Length: 400
Image (cartoon, rainbow, N blue to C red; front, side, top):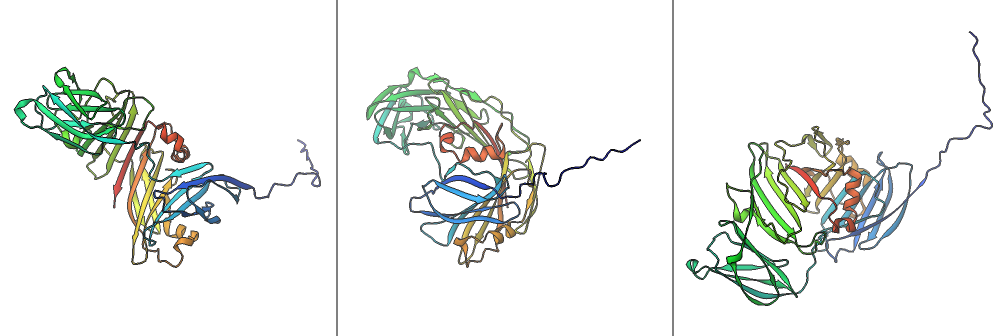
């Protein structure tokens, strides 16, 4: 059998592209306080090479460029405390594309608008020591029963102008009422109250500290004012985990907390047009920390993979007090925080001893249909966060 040799023209063969490309991106960081006007941004490759280390102003969009062929990079932000220059917040996002990120520290959808002190007097209302009252923006509420046998309740609160929405729930009686509050003094007959819906969840075995908190929005998609509807800290019962209204509210936001038998803290968040009747509670954690040294961190995951996870490291010495959050994909199960910090050499931490960081906590976050990158993109978009487009999350954490 004859062999055929095919030659090639070396002189005309294309040369491999060895040029280093430009990585262009825009980035903005809004600090939690307006007095913090500067932060440090560091961009590194996976191999630890520092591509960018610059001090930037907060509250401004910056157009930045780095030379690299890596499709994903490590982004680190160092922010000093405005009041105490020895205090720092450090955040690292491992292997991400931070283009177009706009991170707002302390982000909230809430909008504070003018209020005035107001009073609602409920008549024909049966006494309930667990009575729960709320309005759309009131940060203070006082309930008083002049005489428990008179079926008369006085609610003092800060009324949102020009019109507020008052909510009263009597969990012992299973009754609630909404009232459009357009004046500073109102009398409301409770005899026409509605019947609340009670819900008891199927809880995992051997859990403790089970808590539920329900908020509502009278207009779906408008999250500028959150209406508290249920708080198990004030209305705990063996008969139900929730009581909620079936009228007025167009969208509900539920938060459930508990601690499993191994001491892991679980939190579930759900936003939707209806209160979920079944929740995907887990009996066990979806991760374990194998090594927690500052020079050797290792974690393992179950089949219930999260979208991402982060470790929190704390340092408290005479010259520096810092918290360092390291975000990663579940594909990255080990790293050396000490070496990372030594390679970064942040300007704002120059001359300070930072070798004593200790692991404080680890937390996983699972958001259906979100990857690590798309979760970070969501977090880096105030527009998406204002719309609460992420409707469901499961968080599991452990303190050390």
